[in-house]
Amino acid sequence: MWDGRKAFKHVRRFFDSTAVNNLAVGEKVLFKIKKTNRYLLIIFLVLLVSCESEDIVEPIIEPDPETKIYRIPVVVHVIHLGEPIGEGHNLSKERIEGQIRILNEDYRRKEGTRGFNTHPNGGDARIEFVLAKSAPDGTRTDGIIRINANDVNNPVNPSKRFDYYAYYSYWDPEKYLNIWTEPLPESAMDIVLGSATGPETDLPGVELLLPGEPHQSEGVLINSPHFGESAIDSEYNLGRTLTHEVGHYLGLLHTWGGGDCENNDYCDDTPAVSNPVFGCPAEASPGCDGQEIMIENYMNYTHDRCMNTFTNDQISRMHYVLENSPGRKTLLNSPGLDKP
Ligand SMILES: [Zn+2]
Image (cartoon, rainbow, N blue to C red):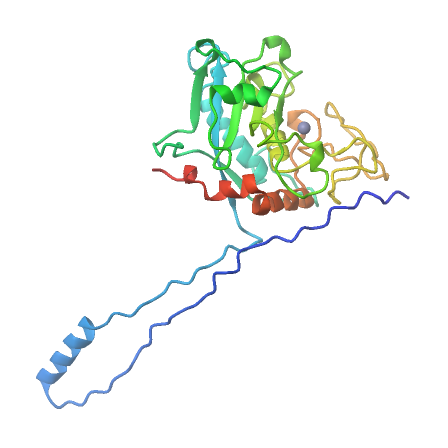
């Protein structure tokens, strides 16, 4: 019986407990006034009203850790090759907004969408993504930047992919989730889907993720045909590449982790496996300890239409990152979330 993989414990979520509910309740004082003089009564009432200046201190209510929603501002840098908006790599606004909607359906396990599941270990990650409303310079934005790569002489070696795309456009990664759509040749479709940098965290297994700042620019890269829902001839055409990559960005490993049964994804509720599952098999084969492999997990390699589950342990891992990682917790208070 194999039992060596259960290293990830539910991580305690830390919430700032400095805000004490220090209520100054306005006291109500009752007076009994004798009917002695009508004028005295009127003067008294006028004084009472004009002197009423109770200092009511609103209680500071900390979000319930079980229902708190984490909101992350997103900027999408569309790197194109000079096509008009809506054609080729220059993705339409509708397509981009549709991708963000899909991301939210998946991270919120929304009923009535492809992101809903009834898996006993599946959960609502309570993470929401918002196209940025304010740019770094404080101006209003729709969270979409378009760069014609043909107009820019980019000196960065393309093999350094994150730095290469960041040269075109990059917003403060502590305040925005930077997503670039890559204008790769058609031959790269279904071969290069996307990649992401992982967070700075003390969670086990993070060394399996790509490092972000200060080693390289930080964010998510998606090959443009796989960004959002589209009619391309591909099994990766429903926007799940981004769901998967953002999972890495928030600290999740593949379900097969380090590629053997001993070094897995540090989540107790995703059955241990040593290899990815490709395609969309009708029946899940048994994993390392005989349990069915979770082919519907977003952190597997199955087709977009087969994925619909983040487990509760995966969600705990992402919440731990959002509460503690230096480059992630700052996103939650980003000015990019609000209009200028
Ligand atoms: Zn991956």
